[in-house]
Image 1 (cartoon, rainbow, N blue to C red):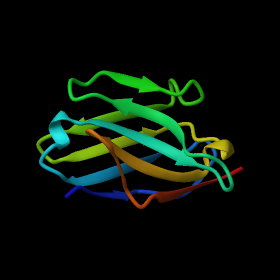
Image 2: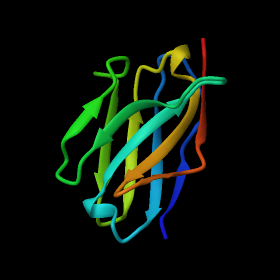
Image 3: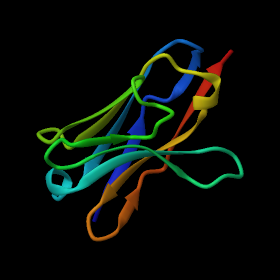
Image 4: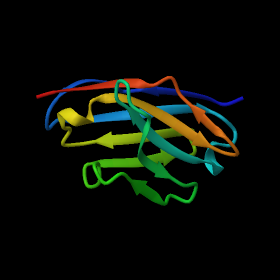
Amino acid sequence: QVQLVESGGGLVQAGGSLRLSCAASATIFSIAVMGWYRQYPGKQRELVATITSGGSTNYADSVKGRFTISRDNAKNTLYLQMNSLKPEDAAVYYCNLLFGRNYWGQGTQVTVSS
C-alpha cells in the first residue's frame, strides 16, 4: 500500500521561498517516477515537476529556474524547493507517485501574498 504525506505548505510573501516535502510509505519509492502537481480552485490538476528514479527532472515552463524538485531515496522523501514565489503559484500542491498507476497525497496549501 502506498501512502504519500505532504508537508511544508503555508503562507509566504511574494518573492519568498517554501520547501515542500512528501514522505512516502512505499517500498517502490526508489524506482518510481515522482512528481509535484498543483491545482487551482475549479481547475484541473497540472504538472509542476517530475523526477525519475535516475534523477532526471522535468519542469513546467512557469516554474523553470524558480523551483527545484529532488528526492532522497534513503529517506523515501520527495522535495520541492520553491523560490521567488509569485501570487500565481498559490494553489494546493500534490505529491504524485507513478508506478503502474498514479498515487496521490492529500495535498498541501500554498498561499502567496502580493
